[in-house]
Image (cartoon, rainbow, N blue to C red; front, side, top):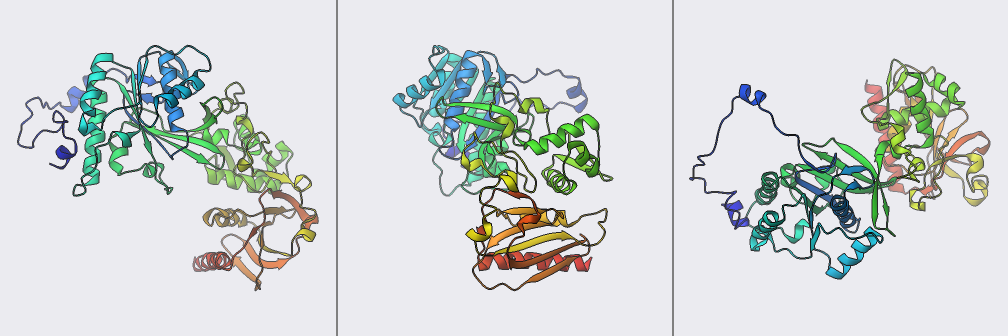
Length: 497
């Protein structure tokens, strides 16, 4: 059999198909509902239950430091990742990509002078599972009965694949055997793994290998670095699905969970609106603008972006906090565990949002008023006339989608990251540099009560209300064709409705 060959030595899990298992027992649904089962045991409560957990991420992203942080926390007891409660238990950590010297240095770095826990056992070697690693793993589980076992990384113990066999079958056999071993021994087994180079719409699809790896595991955690910072995606059979904002201190080698990513990465302007809606209940854009002392056009655009992000919802023209996607803001503003968490840059463009100057420049991108943007007043002398793609309202605004929705669609669907400006009239403009000849264009969208124009000219800085910190990007002919084609298609779809 394919799996049997790939996992030589795992015969207790994979028996020949003609061998009958006399221990199989069928349970009626009625009897099943009367049975009591113990709650799952946790290595890290709320994050790593007993069974098999995958921790995946790009190379050099800090997965091994995170695994070591968890190992030390479980061995010592207290809190893991600065947040999750853990009870002390024995840990075995196979650090298979490190030498003993490097592992010693990392452990000393994480402990910061604290005594090393005697119940944390380490090794920098473990044979491949089909070359003696399976029996060795069983031996240490029987001998030490640990609470947590970490194998860093899966690639170092995975049996070499036979080309003629199905990758899915082999990987499901391997991961399934490890999952079953962990469940039978009531141990949490954390397997460190890699992700693919290309991103995917569904985060679990980024885990390297076939879908068998994520399908057979009990819990999957995927560590990613985004424009806002690090995010740990968590999902599993016994854990609540979470997206945690993470902070890494390279000097200390410490990872800290800051709270729900969407909440932590929310800008101050968005947080103001969320807090207001929580206190006052559903409100209209006009009511929100008056309560916060903001300009209505800026608030409306921000509300559109927040709806698209899933932070709030709108029903009958009144905006509500989406309670399924946001958490208590006190989790995100805990200055003890996360001194820089309250001001990580927001994803919004279009209104003034405070920049976190303590974060690296790669995390910049928040909004500012015109008076606070360096170089804007000198734009006309420092740059040739720019290409302006503007989105504005036309006629009376309807109850449905409007030009703001169209601007958001354009920005998000085409990944536009150039300087964006909101004029005092509410018009949204995207500015580009372009060296070639430009034919002015105009599109009309009846459904959106919107008009879009493309032209080349000198920006009217006197009418600018707010502006992003993004640089004015150079527009290539191919990208210009993409923009025009997108607008042509949208206009045609709008006409056909």
